[in-house]
Length: 414
Image 1 (cartoon, rainbow, N blue to C red):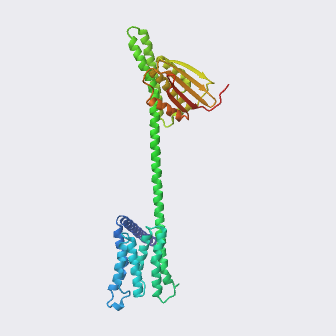
Image 2: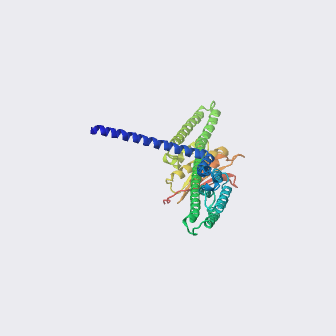
Image 3: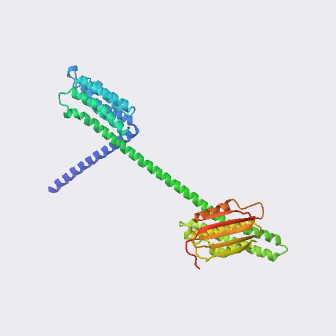
């Protein structure tokens, strides 16, 4: 018996829970529907709200058979004004507020009492106007609306100036202005936050674009330095081999061997550059050429037919990776230009000082053509990236000079 009662009780409770859940679901869907339509059709929602507000006054006026029995004389007109005020509050907020306020004050003085529907419409209009004005204009407008209403209510009432029903006018108007001001401040804050977020996103995009451009420039400079020197060597040796191929095959064989070595070198360096591009780490994380490979560079230049007078001053020491790579690439490009535009000889001097390393490459100018284009630009960019300077140009003695001053932390050993 007890088990049956418990089962029946559980069944009833389950049905009640299902009904409650259904009511909650229906209410949630209705709220979502109203919210969505309020966003998409705000004027329609305002018209419906105005109709709901005006309906009690219109029904009260229509239900009376004798004008003397009307609870609020002119109820139909009051309802119509309240409906128009709420329905049109977004179209012309300030004019609608002024018309509503003047009507409320006039009816209060004529009828001798305040009209609830019209007062509610006036509060809604004050809130709407306060949502779109600055704080000073909000409170000036609220004062201009509330003070005449307060005076009219006091003049038509038998109560004192401090009666709650009279002060209530000031309270409701002030509350509507405060809520509208708070809503405006919140919207302004949200808009500012969104604007800052957009600016931050744009800044990040600009910074990413700048980094992409700088990386492209670095890659182009690296490939130029890697390819140009060795391709120039290959071109010179190919021309020499073609010239002596039939008469001096031994010399042609030596030239072809230099071509093979230069090709192997450029392939290795290209593979190194491509390998770095495929990695997430920066170039400094992998092996890079530096002044330790200067002998190999001079050997390649000599094989290309350039006589280099190489001199070093100071104690040779390890340089920072960025400076070491920049020094090597600058010397590589300078020697390539000396071979292209010079007379076949160059003077190379490397000076190790206490806090810097100085590179000097000079060569006689062989013709009207002079180094230019991306080669000199790349050398200057490399020197600047390493924190140094580079000067290049012809001198008064008819020689072209490249001078780079790069920072090199450390002390020169005696």
